Length: 205
Image (cartoon, rainbow, N blue to C red; front, side, top):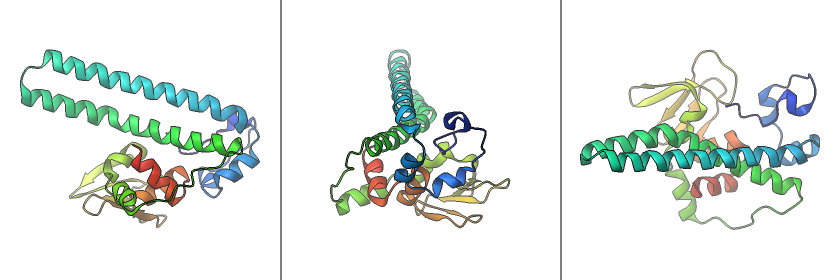
């Protein structure tokens, strides 16, 4: 799914806007520039919340099916992991979109954002989130190369993969646009969040 929030239809124009343009704007600027946000944000938020419920129901149904039908403990464990692997990516994307849309909604309504002070424990907890699990749904043509992963960078347009994930250090680096960092930095770039907001997103998963 594209990381840009608005498309040409939403904007009500035929003007093509490069996805990178959105990443140069803060969320406050997006709200100011696009008055359509007042109508669009609640609609999109409802859509993603409904999809999150659907995904959770799918997980619940499949886990119950495994419990009822699979008697062998090892096989039961295996199929549970398959369900997690298949559905977790979409669930993470739902949570990320809902977090961002809620933030945009508060900005549009003029409400203050969270002012809580981060603790070292929260920051460390955020850094421990697997960057491979978190980012795999956002990266096209992702494949494993040795101990690492390579795919198309989600932060710029490219035809040949130059985006690397390093599980050992839980970090990423793109040799095309030179973006890099830990899992917190990825969330900052992917969802246009501040460091604090990225930590909050990762610790609320």
